[in-house]
Length: 315
Image 1 (cartoon, rainbow, N blue to C red):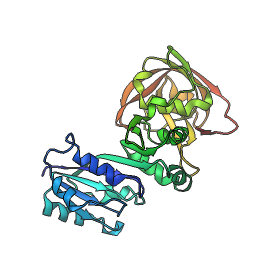
Image 2: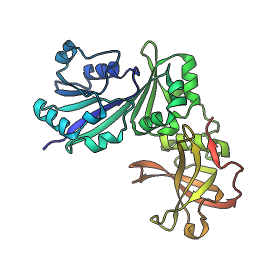
Image 3: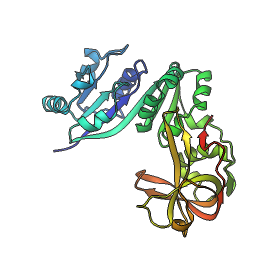
Image 4: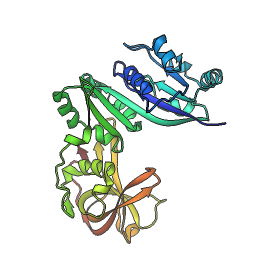
């Protein structure tokens, strides 16, 4: 049985999901007479009217609660409608793990898109930061809409990039014009030279930028201050160098770390100790990330004292 591609649009109520879905389905680059099963998991300000559904060859399935979002219901809908693809307007309050549990075996999750209303972003970040992080971390594309210049500046001060270094992030203004989040994101260190010294407080920004754009750093020498971690399953020369960081809120502390290779690492690396490290950046495919990411080839390694506060803050 052929697989059915699934596109999930996540985000809180009034984040612009319905409008974004309509624009996407109407886009000739996305739709070429395919039949779409459109699953809506909440009632928003905007609805899918009959004219839109007829015009775009969509069949609408409304699901009102998590309890109704079951594999059996989805299989039944697919048998009835025989769609070429599935688009899900997902409820922003639902656990994303529900998708992993309930999507039928031949439904292939192609992409998760997260829409965020810039006008309410700060409120949600302060009150529901862990839920924002969950959706942002799983998304390949994050779109902030209704952005003013002031809101764009605020978004740049938050840790949205750290939540998902590999996501494409766009800021859309009130007129629908979009800009790449990275275009106006100045770095606190110079990347033009062959050697880059990263101050301890800037490790998070370096990690995010390097993971997002490994080509920028490939072949360069970097100096970092990092905490060490070694897993039993890793080769003798491999360890992790990173920092525990408050990515979003107190409940979402993550160890942001690079894989690093060093001769004798199994003897020199002491779990959770710190070190000053000089390394050449290589780009390698790493199965844990399922992507090519920066890997540090260590040339100098000097054990160091732990900081007064071992938690790294972005702001």
